[in-house]
Image 1 (tube, rainbow over the protein chains, first blue to last red):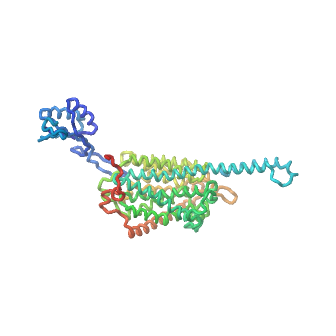
Image 2: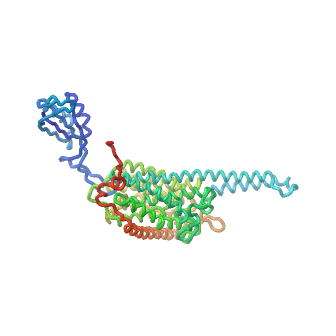
Length: 112
Length: 470
């Protein structure tokens, strides 16, 4: 099992959800996060005081999938989230040791 | 308006009476039915005007209260960080309660009953004798009680304005004590000097240095603005200012607040005509044009210097214009109002962006930069543009309107305006400093550092402004 963590532009969330639904991914966890990579943020000025706002609002998706589906999901996600501009975000993939469905105690891939 | 109605009825009365009286002469001296009808008509006309004036003044009174809550509370509340939004709104709201009680007990009397040149007396203590009967000295067509309430709303917003300078760091207990003392030491004497009968600067009721302040340039804006500066310097900077990011948490709230202030200001200025007269309309016009021109003035200056015209700049400009036009509103025509507004917009922009940062004081929400600076500019320019074409309230012995400002050829008026402004500055600065010392010793002024970081909402009031997950 793999966990796919994607940090994307908030305005791309709907496109990504649509695309993932299209290939049959029906579970995901989404949170509002703030952060920055190489994108440098922007300047805000209030009554003459300048602030560099470098932590920008992003959306983080977390999806756990079987090993064989991982590549397809990552490709679909990356394509849907891409605008081609700096600040589009990143995708991280990691191994998952175990999954448990709380309701009935299913374990492993059958819990996904 | 009042004068015109009265003359009209007198003329009609004279010619009707001469017709009616001739056949009745033989009947002796008894009042004729025609005379009685005329007297009844005159009384009815007076009652109608009284009702009209009182209706406008009650509406104006309510409008001025709306400026503090929710107007100023929203304007200031949006400018602070979200951990301080309730604490900031509470400061304005508390003035609505605190000042009202003090006003009823002794405030009104100390400001508006007859006393000496500097302070009023005790005649209206506990609002004794303030009822439906008009007070001819101040407003002959509305109940004395209406006048008292209208003036109360000014006494509420003035200390509320100061809270912009102490935002995000002052103890609530210290604030209540400070404001109570400030009302007595600074506001009431200044209101008496400028508006009270026999006050030193009262241009219309026997002041020795006649100073024009239609709706509170000196009494409201200079006193609050200068006191705000003293408070900001005395309290010191907020934790982390100016290095940490201290951004307004909701300019949407500030925007709504500023729009409410603009509308409420019609009650403030046009209401200061104390009747539904042509003078009220003239003040209404000056107020509106002043605010509009100031918005544009601020935005142009900001666009040129900062590269972008901001929403905060636009609404700050409007408030600056409203402040500056306040003393002038009942004395100037629309074109000078545009000029005063525009000048205030540009001047206050430089006050809050350049001057403040140059000296490094943390006037957090720019109470001094806008009210102190705008009020001073407006008070002086009133001496330039005041004209008898707008306000013929000052008359010589034979009933001719006296020249008012520089445009009428009265050069000396500017000196008087400077004198009034100077006294307001000195009284506000010295009074505030002494009161701050007293409060500092008695209860301490600032919240603990830890509470400041946590935010006033939680540490002082035990609440949060936004519990969006609940």
